[in-house]
Amino acid sequence: MTAATYMSSFDQANYARQGYFTDAEFHIGYSPSAIQRNENGMGGIQAIKPMGNEMVREIAALDGVEKVTEIKSFGARFDYPVNDEYGNDDMIYPLTEEETMEIGKYLESGSGDYILAAGNGTAFEIYGCEFTTGESITLHYYDGRKMAEKKLRYLVF
Image (cartoon, rainbow, N blue to C red; front, side, top):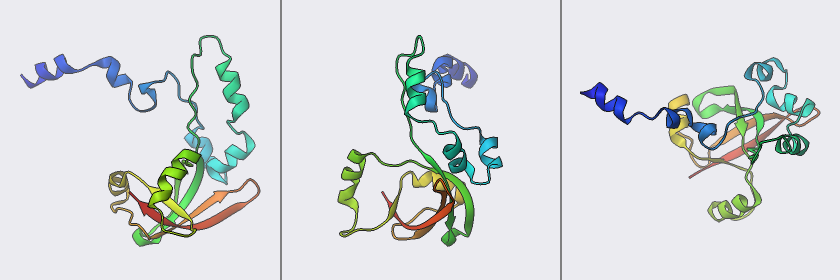
C-alpha cells in the first residue's frame, strides 16, 4: 500500500527540478576541485577568470536562450571560534542595494560590520550549533592581490 501510494504521487519532472533547476536548464559555476587546487580558493579563481557581465552577455546572445539569472557570490574561508571551527570554505552572497536598505532596519544604530545569517537550521545540521547575534566570525578572502581578513559580528534573523 505504501509503495503504491508513493509511486502514484511521485512526479519525476518535479523531482528533477529542485534547487537551481526549478526555473533553469543549466547551472554554470566553478569546479569544486579547481577551487580546492587554487591556493586562494574560489576568490583566486574568480580573480583569474571572472564570470562577469561579458560572459552573461555571451550566454544571453546564444540561440534559444530566453533568460539568464545571475547569483553573485565570492569565496571565503571562515573561523568560528565559538564552535572551534577554523579555515572552513564557504561562499558569501552580497546583498543588493534594496536588500541592504530593507535589512538596515534590523541593525543596531551606528555603523558596524555584520554578516547576516539566515537558515540557522542548516548551520546546526552541518556544524552542530546555531549562530547567535553578536558573536564574531573572521572571514579570510582573496582581495585580488593577497589574502585578507575581516572580523564581523553575526546578525541572525
